[in-house]
Image 1 (cartoon, rainbow, N blue to C red):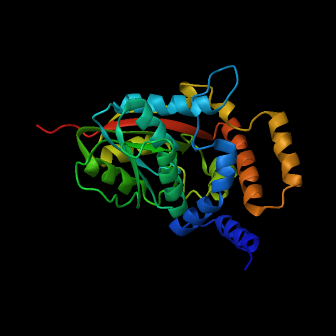
Image 2 (cartoon, rainbow, N blue to C red):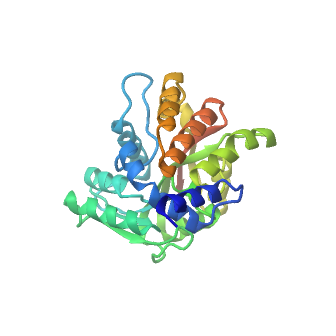
Image 3 (cartoon, rainbow, N blue to C red):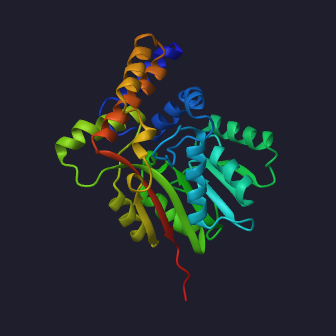
Length: 295
């Protein structure tokens, strides 16, 4: 089977309506690496968008620093970034805060690129990367002062288990902080079918949770939720998605001349994402929870 044929078969499997198995998510995000690096550089997540002015990498960096501040990152902290991608946030936050950061990814190609990035920035003493699963974090109990996530739990097959694992590896008083893709609250079955299920199929997401669902799962894991914020309340979130007619037309024009199946899937996914965001069915949440110190 040729690489294109294999990619088409994978994308067809993603579009089947079944929740993608972990190996499907892993394979898809291996194929996506060159395109994500083209579109997003090393920081694969939403930004903290201002109401006006240009958008760009500074928005992603600003959101990372906001989450780091909530997590209380400082030079004596041990930090875990779960679903670290190719290491952009981990390297940025280690350089900015002086914290010791470990990134975790199940993807071998992402792992090598992350390690390469840390070496290129001279951060090997403060940043390291491991391969492993969010459902079974490969670390001892109470190993970290903070656990971070940047748009990774939406891909996890069992988010509730991840939150339990996050609590286990946090020290008393440690913080879980991050941001993730969400379905808006209160969508009926028709809205789920119209906006959310196509979005999940396009991005290899098992299912999108809600802000209240994440907060509830964190509490059930034994964490005290301090913040569960819809980013539409904190920034001009829609500026990060393809909602303007001219931008949508540009993507459609590019689609007409694009044969690569993965690039086409990403372009179509961007259109679906913009549609769902503009309709108010999709959003991004920011979270902060604490493993409270016991008496």
